Image 1 (cartoon, protein in one colour):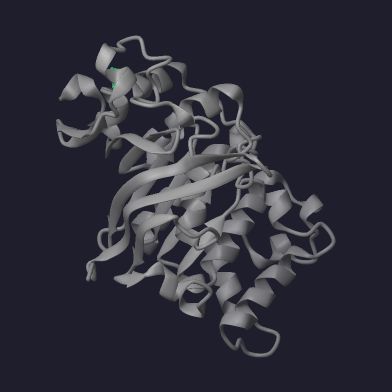
Image 2: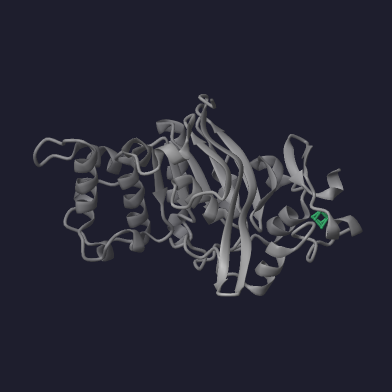
Length: 319
Ligand code: SF4
């Protein structure tokens, strides 16, 4: 089943319970999300949305850090629950975190991460690390540039490239990159973004790119899913969705082009603001409280996904 797919998410929902004792509430952080990545050709698929939209929770579900409450995830045709924690899966699906200074222990030399990873996934000849050298070369670094360096002795851009290189040692098929450029100086951002593009084109690596930054998403992605309160509200080719967004929330997001928010982290999803909590628990369309085109039906009935111009749009305007 699904043998021609790299990744399949089928109606995936993740519910978190907040609060204690009698005062508990449930939040659907991810709500019936479905999408597929083909095995070939490789693809850069972006998840975009505001802080608290659930995009980092989707990443954690794919990495097996969280289990879905319902729905199924398949990787290369196999159910994810059969693969979690297995060597082949860990090799094949690598995360790239937002803050490279948190990825590396400040007291450990950067080169040791590479050597440890290489040793745990192969048996390099004594004193030689060919996979380390190859992966550093792929990101435009050399062994000399990391030799004997602690993380604080490297720039944010260099260190993020080093963290991508470390992920590449295992020759992965899929990278899950959560806000990978938001902590990096604007001047260095494009070098990392271009690197993702090259990895897809030259190494055949697929990438799930999670971001607030629609400019870089437009530049590197093939497809984009716009997320609002755990739901995909518009999904399609990045050119169509960002050149001519159809969902009123995509239109708002595209016109405001929010800057990357360093507070939006892997661990942050269920610390909700009042607005977020209200929208998560709202009946009907989650965007009805802010939508300039709201109709009476939007308050009481959740819209389905409608196919319009080769994309899916979750909005009653397109019934
Ligand atoms: Fe706006 Fe209604 Fe569409 Fe929701 S369903 S985005 S409230 S028009």
